[in-house]
Length: 197
Image (cartoon, rainbow, N blue to C red; front, top):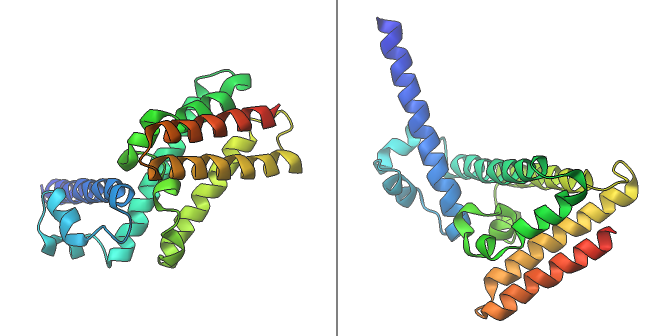
């Protein structure tokens, strides 16, 4: 009986921890690392501020986990998209989804690189490590869509492709002109598709 109660408490604590990280993952993309406070996260998760330290050793530890979840979600969505289309259309599908109006407008569930890239250099090493791992993973996923995958040229194109995607999305979100926002995404998409062939 004692083990059942202990297991139930551990499961409840794990579920609560996961809820906090999920709230924080959305919050950092919406408000940035600097705009994400512990008290706000705990309130949004339906918990008291005091409960924070039973889950995390520091704010930076929470931010690292939140960044990890945001990156994992983005990588999983990209990998799932690639898996559902034919190999010859995977890059076009990725670009279409990434540089879409829906992605521009959906900041808190979108790409953490575009939302947090400019703030990341000033974060704790564990946060930067998460970002670095995600960038490498995304470069590899893009490179795998090239017919010459495994060659230096495919890797280099993937570096440029990811950089252009993230930059175009960041700028499309920054401007207050819908037409310009759409044009930034469309121009980047067309250029990257042309460069891939």
